[in-house]
Length: 167
Image (cartoon, rainbow, N blue to C red; front, side, top):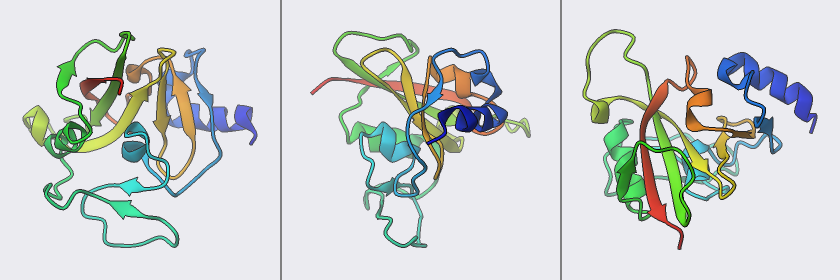
């Protein structure tokens, strides 16, 4: 894995990482899991509603009792099933707490959609070190210093931060 070259490519899509000294590519590319699964501590499944196509060898999962609309409220419910019950605006590390940031598309068309009805685009998870980790589509896992450093055109903005106690 050529981490420096990969980081340069990642910074092109996420310019907020340019000045993030904590950011680095931490894995090889993998189509076997996505950011939502990665935030849910899973690296062998792709979690997304409404997926009907199959990539060879990729296991897709979405709880059958959740709607298949790709909106924030459904992702919040997914993480509630994983014992995330408290909402937080604090992205800083808290002892004994695991945090997940869920991202939503920016309201470019000025539709003024309620937050819970906005399209969910990404999830990032806080590590015990205080750094955050993200899976970038079918590509790499990365570290970044906070959930806001990857906001922008690609993933939009942090919509909500959920938290739970470590098991």
